[in-house]
Length: 281
Image (cartoon, rainbow, N blue to C red; front, side, top):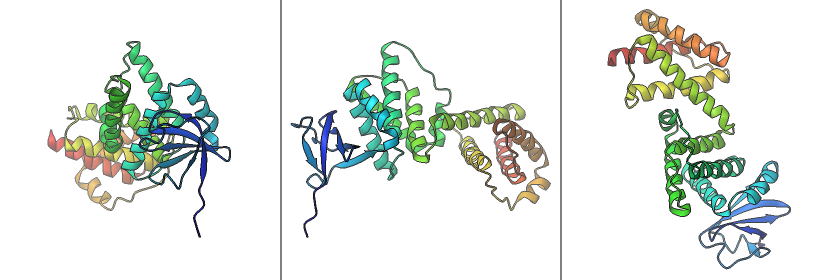
């Protein structure tokens, strides 16, 4: 039995490689090399005939927002954004939350406007984002290359981090503001530890990477009431008394930030990281 074609109606051509289509009153972004060339609004395109191309549905919840983006943002910027999202999905081998089609296009659009106006936006968490989300960060780097190549705009390095946060947030289905909040808390905790130990922590060191990676997952566990049992806790409390005492102060600091109690198991894990930092220094 012959497979039935699934047909989509073109409602907007963003570039030769990106078009927006509609089927059953639902929006779909179609990405494929040369897919928009020679086509016009109202044309019908078949998914079966273009099997090498990718159809991405915009969820009903995001439909109005995306329609607003289509009327308020330059077509080239939207097309570029869709290519970045497709690249991210391919590299991560997973579909991203549909909201990124609205949020990232809006962000890149304003980033371009700020750059044209000479407004420099600083990202104080750039190194933390690079360490915590290395794959998303590498996609952000590629995004800036594409923006320069296709739009002729040189966005500042700070935008790599912001784009990475958008991609990470779409992966875990959370708001960018929440991802940024947790990244900020990680940086504040590291600064707190640095002050308590009276040492300067090398951001390029293995100890630093291990510490902030642990803090990232610790914050997630604490926020979601998931305790990670520490089988070495008795030994840590006995052998690393100084570090455990400092870790308690650190965890009190985290507890205030998150408004959550910190399990003793987490205090023990952070004490070990403090011990490594003291040994290194």
